[in-house]
Length: 104
Picture 1 (tube, rainbow, N blue to C red):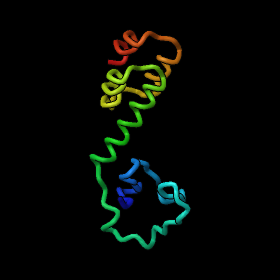
Picture 2: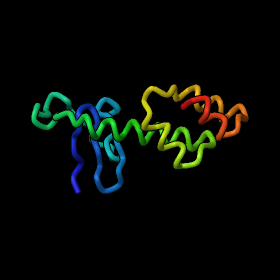
Picture 3: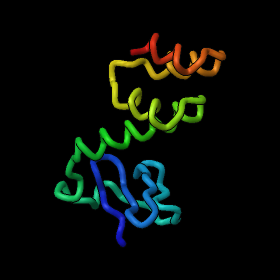
Picture 4: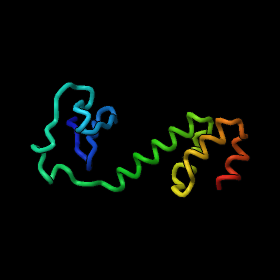
């Protein structure tokens, strides 16, 4: 499968990796991408896709801090929840059930 541009990011559908053109490395290759050569049609914004990426990143961060996957998914989808506070609570030893009560 070929890489697909989404807004400022490039998605490789075969492995799910996401890279930004300015990094000059795309999908693990050393091919440089010239942003000037990309047409505006190739840079369509996909708000739903970008939102999904943010929520996945938030959930992964919360799981790394100690939240179970279900709790992490709920917190990740709740954009009014301060991610840094949620991580700090878990990492400082606050029981997950209590952290959820504080945050929700």
